[in-house]
Image (cartoon, rainbow, N blue to C red; front, top):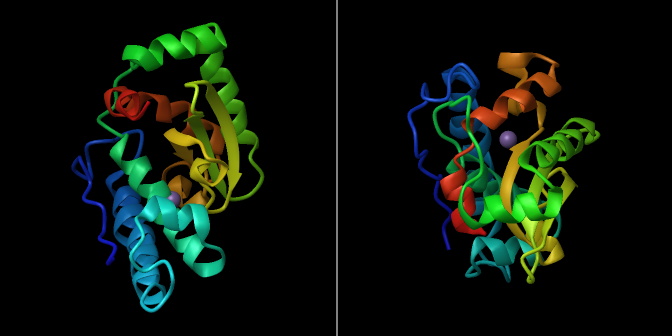
Length: 192
Ligand code: MN
């Protein structure tokens, strides 16, 4: 099945000043578009050709895994973002689960921030859930996604340098600290 470039649910400028229009244009229009083109070149004739993206990521290895993983990761990433708000907090049953398992949103935020800032090299920090609804914070390298561990991806922060270098240079912790303002918790709660 031919992969399409995920349409942004916001305008390129909408996330400023947390993420600049320039970063969005590069991140979505160049980086993600390249993964989509690569996968569309690799899939024809492979055993993965007709599978949904999540299944390709769960089963494939090598170049197909790397490009499919990066497409799935970025689709989930861009879908969960919206214009910044300073009093942004989780909503619904996910908000309740975060309070129950981590004690408070603030404690969860600290733990997730540590995972995102200490991940060595390129990768993704994830909030994911298991079949019993338990929440997990994961550090995953490169193109990896919670579906490879049988978990459901709920929220993610991209810590590849391309996600923040234009706006924050090498200051990954500053980027992560600002990202909490642009998470769309309605979207994230619906995934739970
Ligand atoms: Mn990225």
